[in-house]
Image (cartoon, rainbow, N blue to C red; front, top):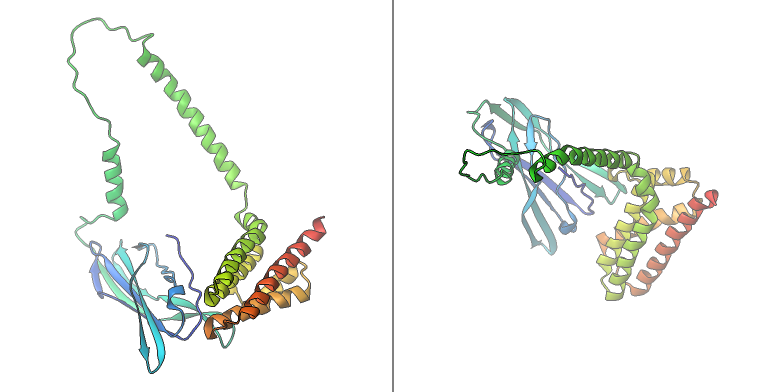
Length: 313
């Protein structure tokens, strides 16, 4: 399952609960997570739900999203739903948590909920996972069609027929396919994903900044600062290997320093991230400030890329 990490700004409340406290290995358990606050709820993504091998967890889905005005303040609420299939009997404790950006401390933190207890007993053993059902259907789909032929007693010479040559070529074809697949796997294994991300970090950042320019021309200040923020956060994560949970000002400065980046460019880089977070939270719509921000964001990324490439030139 591909897990998404939450990155949002604002004041939020987080609740979680399951639809039952007792189940069998034949049952499916539904876990719901509710995020409520005054931030941009559309940016909230399903937080990761990490359980033991005793459970099979399917991709979460958004089941509800709404906004209400309470005492002059817009409060949004978003609900995620997870389907959990227990595979073994036992008493389990589920501790879901959610990541958020604390605007006051300038750090990303995890906000845990109360532990959820689930007791699982052995079922009848008749239930099957969705993947098993799909697998059996796929096997039935590819079974060959058998035709009934009427055979007569006559001499059949197999050697030299087209069927003979086809069967003779099958092992050769299978061998060539296996050989090609092994070669491809070795080539892919030789490529370090982190190195590939680091090399393409600048190119990906410029793509994001180009999208920010489109929002600038359209006068969409919120979308503009959102694209700048994504470009810079994605750049530093790809370039240094930091995860979103490790993304603090001190860590960013330390990692960029190890790449021999000048303090001036590091300071500007961190300042742009902070400005975007404030703009997304409090709102900043001045067109001249946005134009200045865009030009500065382009220059800082270009300067850092030049500093990194300079020792190798």
